[in-house]
Length: 112
Length: 109
Image (tube, rainbow over all chains, first blue to last red):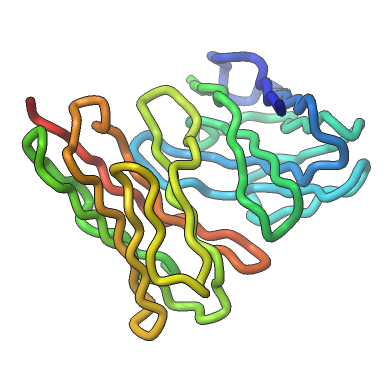
């Protein structure tokens, strides 16, 4: 069975500080990987997707970047956090671009 | 541009009643429609899904009705239970996926 793990569970960071969030998928080789952002009570906004190692596509510009250093790992980062970055960050995977997506448990980010 | 619309924004029904959540979309190239259930503080979980070649999909107490001509679908939850209280997201997918804004469902015991 496939499992998806996100770290950390929660972060409280200062405006202007750097950030790195991680996601690991186990039990599935060469998955498509996705990063989503969700405001409190809001919808799911896709930020990035990756279909292979080393290749990442940006969907929206939010002063964030993503990388896929390994087949099973997806990293979301920024050098300077903004207040608007606060929210719930979700990693998801799918078998391919047309298959259902499965979400991780999420990381709650609070920027003060 | 909101390609996937959900209504109502929030819904309250009594335990044992049927909850009906609505969804519509604009892009006729969408051909796959998953519904996700999300509890506070958790990631969304795939609940049930339907492909555009079907007009109905049933899984226990959850049923999707799909009208391709009108670009509408609905999720029916029969015999609603307090544990069904959650936010439900409709999504539409072709090559890319788009999520609706969600319906917050509350089941009163």
